[in-house]
Amino acid sequence: MDRHLHKGVDVSVIIVNHNNFKLLEKCLSTLFEFTKDVSFELIIVDNNSTAGDIGTVLSQFEKTILIRNELNRGFGAANNQALAISRGKYILFLNNDTVFFENSIRKVLNFAEEKDDHIAVGCKLLNPDGSIQFSVYDFPTLNNVVTSNSFLYLLFPKSRFFNKYYQMNRGLNQTTEVEVVIGAFLFAARSELINIGGFDERFTFYNEETDLCYRYRKRGGNIYYLPDTAIIHLKGGTANNNLFRRYRNESVATIKYYQKHFKGVKFSLAVFAHYLGMLIRIPIFFLFALVRLDKRILIRAMSNLENLFYYPSNQFKNEMNRQELGILEKYPDAFSNGLSTGYQN
Image 1 (cartoon, rainbow, N blue to C red):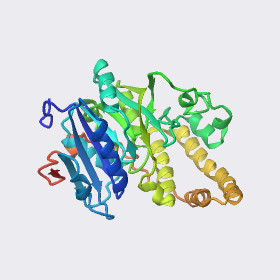
Image 2: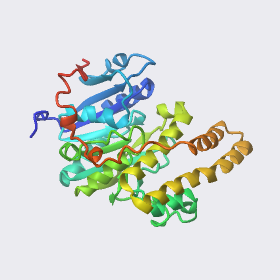
Image 3: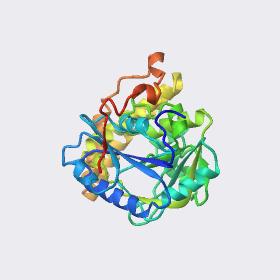
Image 4: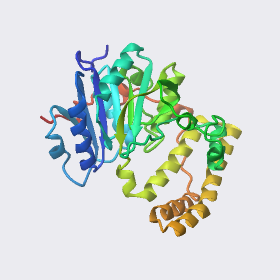
């Protein structure tokens, strides 16, 4: 047992925030309202918010630990900061644009306790209207990279060969072992997350959970989708306030994943398919934007055009750079170094 663990904390709930105070307040209100019979701590990492005072929001909630960053460190790095000081047996990485309506953490905790420490769990995510979101998918392979960029996944939605979202398209209504659950609600044993070094901080925005789940499974962990409980995912985060930046970050994160996990001809074909997919989408999105008079679709078309001429530098070339430091090595004295402002109440 490492020096950060304290007895009596079942779950450390970790939320990264950047300017979304209204969403965060709604998330925390429902978290405290519906989470019962669970010993949990709440760690908020604020990535240099400038639209208000995070302390004012958190003053409403008991014993919240706040980490204030003087710059936006990105989703993965911010989560790692909180992971370093967490004390729970389990970790719940939670988006600030989520809403609870039942005791989901207790249900997921019960499931985890019935299994072992080598599991990670994602629950059902719902849209505000109650429809199911795609929250489970397969790891990127050359097959689904090519087919997703050529629209073949639309023709064969229930084919694993063609569609990385095939399990959701088959209608998952029972507990199922999967490859990736999205990071809006990602529950796992703290010890396992520490062992794999947490998130790879080279993934600044997007694909952090894909890479994490890949490494988690590679070390023998199992990842489950638990549809017995659900939360609402509003998908109204900061990224939607700047769609150009969002689409650039998505493209960059996709290529970074190929840089890290694909090699040789496989890598070259994946990158080619990625850029070909953007090229195909430009006229299609422009046409739909004109027909529907939709500014968001027009921005999507323009973003694809812009991203055609951008390729991120490869941070994974040097084999030494691939050796990711452990969390406790990255943040050996998180509290004493001033990363955390401590309890807010």
